[in-house]
Length: 181
View 1 (cartoon, rainbow, N blue to C red):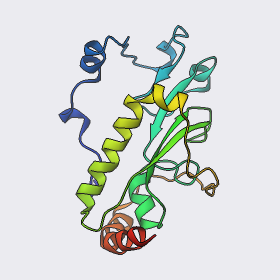
View 2 (cartoon, rainbow, N blue to C red):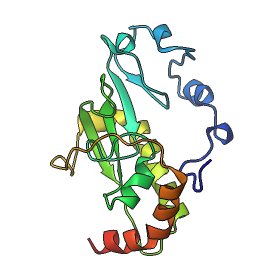
View 3 (cartoon, helix red, strand yellow):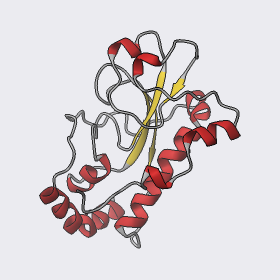
View 4 (cartoon, rainbow, N blue to C red):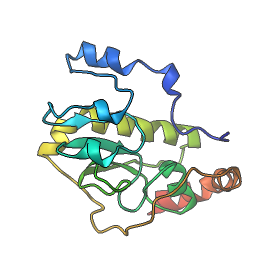
């Protein structure tokens, strides 16, 4: 159970296979990462759990993380950034054997405005994820990371309800701090 869902429900979105067909992108549904062959030059992950080391071997796999790597790693990065006064942004990176530690290709900050509600900010942040993924080729050719000297932090777990309640109560203070900075 969560108090605030910072991403739309995947069951209410357009099917990834349908999008791939429209843009003539090869698409394969895999029940396990062992089914992923080594035929492609680059792979895009549009949502998954942790991939095995055997799957990663010999592949270049790009992922979009909803936090600024290496400062915001793991689950619920959007919520943890707010609770811990961290900047918001999304990271296009290569997946490696460690959680959200692969080579960073690009980081795109998520702007925060004084008029934002938590819902409008979450929506903009999610749209930022989609935009960086949809434009991965541009970012590979034009890597940009305004946060390359940001601190490394340990990976986070799913936010518990008490922490989430605190984050919700803290949001307006966070927004004021980030809008001034």
